[in-house]
Image 1 (cartoon, rainbow, N blue to C red):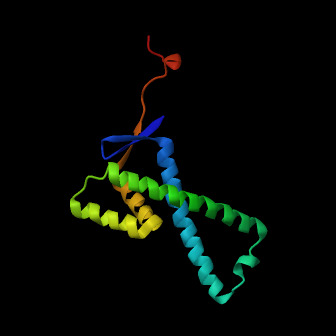
Image 2: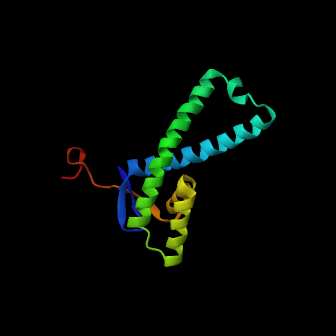
Length: 135
């Protein structure tokens, strides 16, 4: 079992890290896919109706997950900014503005920054009593 440590102080369970990471990836991928579809639709206006039904359903489900994930990510990163972020005043103001005006895109950039610099994975090495080999 593993957990994660934020800024060497706050521990979060692995499922929360995986949820935030999946929201970040979903928002990023759906943004890239949306931009690609928009670019293609400039030359072919009916590109969405030309997609096969399974692909259209898959994109719809991924878009719904990314939409819900964007809201959850936005709330999570505000919580992180309030509770954990203890940088200089200028850095805090910068992230405040990114979250305030960037909404879920600002939260996505902030999450990439936080996960890249402020989090460490820790393996839980406690033995379960029923499987312990110690005497």
